[in-house]
Length: 119
Image (spheres, rainbow, N blue to C red):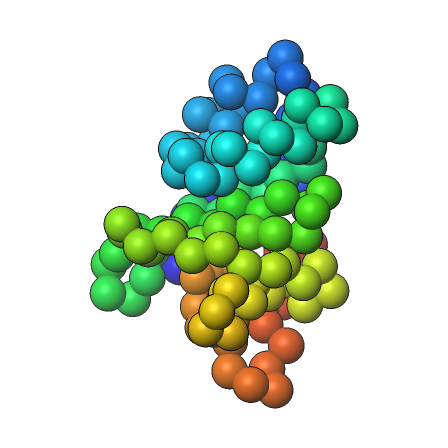
């Protein structure tokens, strides 16, 4: 279940640390990638989704739209992957597992969850 989200939030070199902290982002791999983009481009566009799985486990998905990459975390497990802007699905590197923005697995042939903008 999706608990909180921030979509396509623009971060700058001035506000990025405070903004990410306010969105609950503390995964250092995600922060490192966003920081690199900020150094190169001066800004980054990110989305953050915080969710709870049916098991009660807390999770998060951080997407960096500038590079089409995202990181999904379930407890201590963190997985990087490619973010599909059209279907709003993260495909995990190596395994090919697919997850939508609220942490639910996406089956083959399923195009993911509906866009938050279309709810």
